[in-house]
Image (cartoon, rainbow, N blue to C red):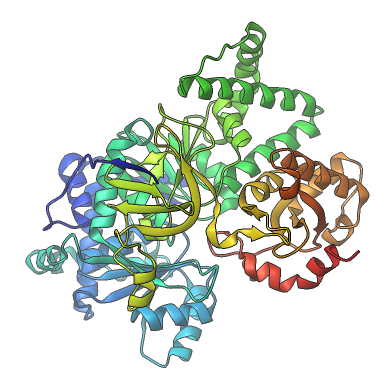
Length: 613
């Protein structure tokens, strides 16, 4: 059995809780910016002192309205400053936050409210409040709903939404003694938030995340990732704050001295990055894939596609040499490569870095597998993608690469205070500061989630190398066993095919079948640009699914992926589906993870057709 243990860098008194991160920030740099908040076309600073003041005012309102210590309060909103304010106020009032994705249906909202017991909800706007009201009608119980947005108010100084501003009590009405008693009543082992799993299989379960989970991860991760997070460095948060990864990093930033900004729309992400100029980003692989393909499309439009591809290959080669050296291998960088790299680093790579705002040296990638060539490309071009790994149940980051200690293709070593071991069947097991306290009112599921030594069973398979770096090899439950008895982990092949320019999603099938096949969906945006460059006009998804040039392009992705596996594991046949997998179609979760079983169920006929003689 492989295993690695990393001792914690920081331990905390059992009497503190996650709100101490903010109090410590105020004590250290209270008059300096903690947030950058967008107000119209401008971004304005909010100091740590100002944020704490409004946290207390909102917390006092919750207490006045009857919130008791231990009560649950739900938040349904896009990522924005008010999200952070509301959650911090819930904690100061002694409550427990319950995040809900803004894309959730009334049926899903109703289940979370029913299961969690939350009877106060912060909703972003009228539309989401309407969804909450539909859910409440099904629930049949009284629920108080507050909105972040409302009619404009001349009295709103720091809060950009007048709706939330109306909830803030006057500063003179804040009972500091009462509020401090509430805030400090929550101890390190108490539940801070109840995060519902994404529900790729079955009904979502509420994960009890403690104050210790967030506070200890923040302290240890900030010290562990100091080169990336940096004191007074800016970041732009655009992942859903309903996801535990975004909030774990947000609390780490509050502790570590980072200045936080929020972007709630991918449509304005590039403009927001240009305004904020983040020093690092937190994102998922799909964001980097889109940036890369968008850059290629622009190069094609300017007749410079060949130059872009040469620059990309140069960056990949340079990064691979750096990676080999980091592993202790001897790797020479030829003079010709050095000269090409120097040229591209003057004329092309700066344009790519400018997309990130011009000052972004690092990006933390999580939530799904990162293509190795993509990681090498961005690192060679000057934005180092640092891949990490974790689950909701581990407060997200359980392992992560470091700026100066990275092995591309792995998800890094365990963060301080964390142990990782590989079970005899290959499953990744985790114990440590981020592991949750169990599923809400579900002792059976909790018992099944841990082994006899108290390690959380992730359901992922992986290996540890000689230096303790973890490589994820697949999902234990997704293992495909062909009719010939060959065990195939679909993840790596799917990820390689999905990295193809016009491919969006890939699902491998073949359980109890004679060979491996694939269902592939297309990216509508990239298809449009690619088809235009090929002189094919505006292809619909239905037309593209039957177009020979499209099929040849997809075949090239499959052929490339097949080079990495044995013949028995290779994809023999595929079908391009004339649809886009989305949350609305029921095939993606709120975190854009593929619901594999839903796809297999809905396209059973297409799968059967692949195996007809």
